[in-house]
Image 1 (cartoon, rainbow, N blue to C red):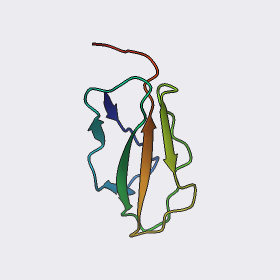
Image 2: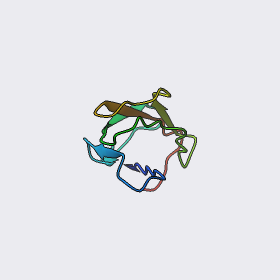
Image 3: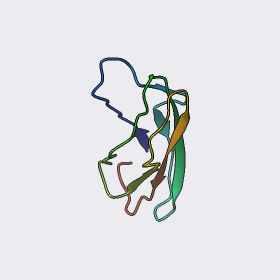
Image 4: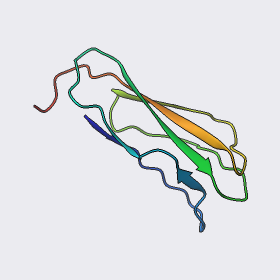
Length: 90
């Protein structure tokens, strides 16, 4: 299972810099197991930023992130929980 993180901001200047890859390959997974991965980024803008919403493409993926404002020159994470409930593509 390959997880691709898409993150778009409506700003003219880049507001974040990813400190980790924005994709993660979980490899071969067992059904009904729970898997986690954490993405980390830095606010490189001069203003605080906030993640308003993250929308996964299926109910098997559960994102968790801070709802607080992230000050300039600070880092934050997005932790993703993945629970494959059925057998997918083989």
